Image (cartoon, rainbow, N blue to C red; front, side, top):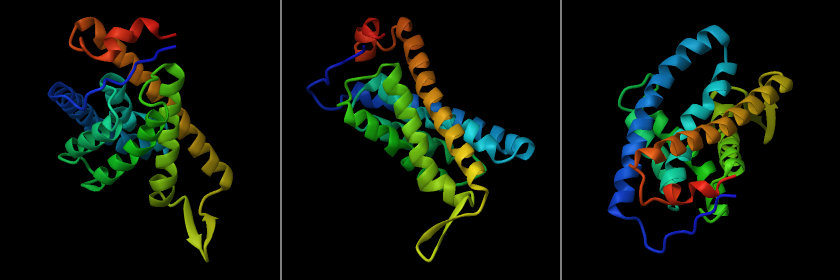
Length: 205
């Protein structure tokens, strides 16, 4: 099991620089994902949103996996969304999405004290993040649900709603693993020397 004690000091300049660099790179990839999404949904329909959702969570998964500072999931996703907002088909609304996509993962990592980053925790962080985002934004903006006299009303078949939700959660869980794979792949390069990910990687099971 991988554990890493929180470093006693607050954010360092290097933490901020690495977080920003990772988030910017992730934000650029988000722009590519946005255009792929537009093409994919025109071919496969709304389910393509659920399939791709995990990719938009990488800022909230990869950044904290490497930096391991409280707030890094939210910070990473927010900065990535700011970069994404510079050139995408959806405008500044992606910034709101970025905040929501950062909250779910941040909550999971905070519950672990930012000490555990094994395969299970990364999958749970990604899956819960996707579930949180699905209920706070996707279900409403995509027209899956509405409120009528204080009650939830499905605007699509309930079984379809559940399928979309499950696919989205699975996509988020897989994104958690992808963030771990990318982070681990960067360790041998030496650019992450001094970060807990580099010193504790061998403890992971």
